[in-house]
Image 1 (cartoon, rainbow, N blue to C red):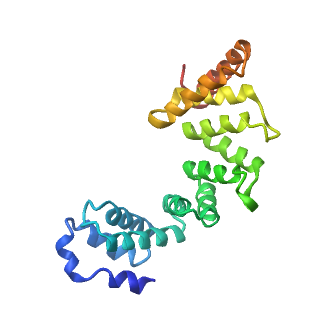
Image 2: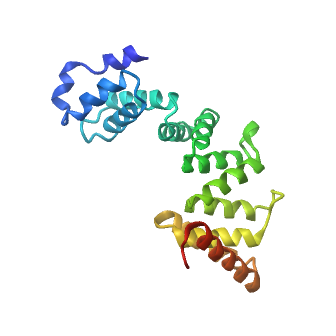
Image 3: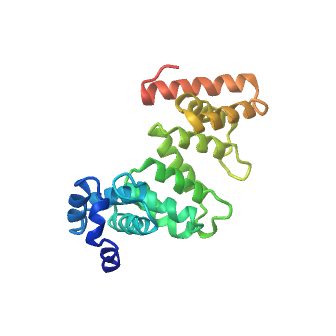
Length: 219
């Protein structure tokens, strides 16, 4: 609770504080400002302004949870990821859901992954997964487009559509960088063995039309 977090912030820590920003964030965070709470999480978790220790990570997670409980979308998303990485997907689900409803694109992607997970139990809902991925893809998020492509290629969904699968894979490949682009490029290459040249050309044209209409990008 709050008293425990306060007990982890003795005055001797002042020598470890390298910027007065920490003081001002703390003052407003204790008054309930969710943005300051999230900024304190970043301060204590990165070790950039204070000496990173196990204790500072406890303080960091306290502030992250406080900001998430207050409904800050980015905090809800990050706290949901922490729960997910701790194999607590059922606890992560409501945080992703709230952040997704607030328009957080990557929360929409993570929520869709949980909804499309065959091991997802009570949360599995392919229609909802498609809806969230379409929403995130429309916002121009390459990772969502990659996941949407994968969904359209699945044989266990009613919406299976290889043309749309190739289209979104191609779009993701065009818009992404780094890890997502490598995954998208490999997926495009793999799909070329499962879709004919005419259908591929149709999918690419659909992708170009979508990018030009939705994003104003010519490819």
